[in-house]
Image 1 (cartoon, one colour):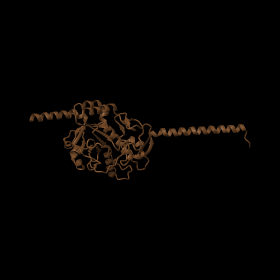
Image 2 (tube, helix red, strand yellow; image 1 turned 60 degrees about the vertical axis):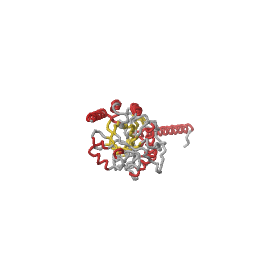
Image 3 (tube, one colour; image 1 turned 90 degrees about the vertical axis):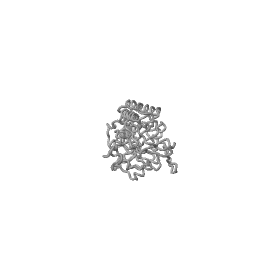
Amino acid sequence: MKMTYRTKRRLRGLGLALLTLTVILLVVWFCSVIWLERYVVYSSDGAKLDFENEPAGFAGVEAVKPEAQGGVSIFYNEGSDAISISKDLTPINGYYLDYASMVKDMAGAMENLEVVPVGTPILVDMKGGYGTFYYSSTISGAVQSASAPVQTVDEFVKKLRSKGYYMIARVSAFQDYMYGNANVSSGLYMLNRAGLWLDGEGCFWLDPASAGVQSWITSAVLELKNMGFHEVVLSNFQFPNSDKYIYDKDKTEALQNAMRNLLTSTASDKGTFTLSFGTNDPSLTLPEGARSRIYLQGIDAKDVDTAVEKTTVPDRSAQIVFLATTNDTRFDKYSVLRPLSAAKTLEAAKAANAATEEAEQ
């Protein structure tokens, strides 16, 4: 049966219309997949869509996605001058301002700082486990926290620097949701490899052996160092305590190598800057001769000596720092930092004790 010219034209037009519709549907489908990607959440049960997912207290404004290597070189130096302790560490006794306190009452922190003597060590949280920065970072890929009072934190840091306090910044090392989300190959995977493993706080953990991870951490340390901080503490410098993720390398070796690389790449001006490590594991071993401290948090006063006995540092009074929540004197045999919110009470007590001692003399 022969088709007329008019019929052929109609069929050709219909075919073009169907082809155009198919292309449009494919484009819409592709765009919807890209849009839905931000709502994919990985958990121990696998991947799922969660349109209401936004971790409480950690909302951020997304900046430029970081490159896998972070753009910072890691220098490997195996010579005798790789790590220097040309200037000995001394015991410290001061205060800390953590994320919860800065969100709750930053104005109070400013007020409490007024009673703290110049030269006192002050630790400030600058980047948390979710991966957001609590200050105005200029690092490419940094995500600024929307819940922390960033501008006030910037002012607080300027005040510390101008008045001559011993400045310590705390940065989350291997617990980092943002970096893990943008660099999946650098994280710890679930056992079924469906995605990255999430801890109880909804955060990803990174592989300490990853060159990209070490570069990313180095970027933050160097920025804070250039801002005037005398010391940076890398908290969460450990593997998470769980059997729900895959890691087939030697964990101790991975931490030790990461520690050495970070010390070498951030301590170029020997004897004037300190890179320290925060952990809940007192047995974490510092490289021999390292100008570093170990910061321990969540240790009860009655367990202080037991925790110290597990450490391997040569100078326990200067290189073991407890982040205490009480004024228990059992912490005072070692270095200790207490909440800045308690500064008025503690400084008043110190002044009263000094007056009593002077009167007795």
